[in-house]
Length: 253
Image (cartoon, rainbow, N blue to C red; front, top):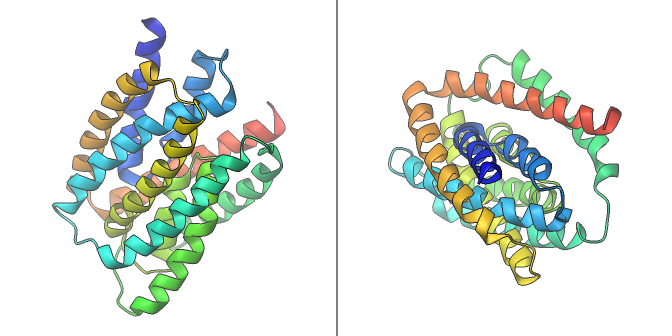
């Protein structure tokens, strides 16, 4: 029971963080690995996808009531991410993801510097990207990020937010809302694969899912209340935390 309470507290925090800018896996995944070290990596990754999906679904519902979502655009982007995440989840059962972490670390440092240096980054939604351009850029990005989510995971939501801002010219609020839709697709793909191969501990995943949903609800309401400026700062904090996490994995762990 103590172990369940620990991972449920982590799931609530993850849901709150994910709702605003993504990156909740930074909290949820390590805690699950530390609390239940007797299980395989694939099983724990499969288990954490259930609460991630639940919290993201609640956040998306909340955002959809306040933010206009371009469903026609995001459907195809989400479909590409789904296929890529399924491939990534399959690959993690055969290949070590350690070799990719230095690359991700460098990318995250660049993201942090760029976001910090551009004070107006994601503060306003621009209209200079056509539907075809947005669709092409979004789908290509979704293939890489979807594979990453299935293969490694932490920070996926933050990468999606970055894509919607930098390539599709959304503001932080709209980027967060659309990122949730794509993240749902990647979670569904991973859940489908891991559940079909027996890599989900439902007795742990379901109580975590309830707490992640509550965290997602609270986080979304807070983000809508505070607006783009707050989300930008929160985004920077989460990206810096992700950098520290990967640096620890690479140099110290």
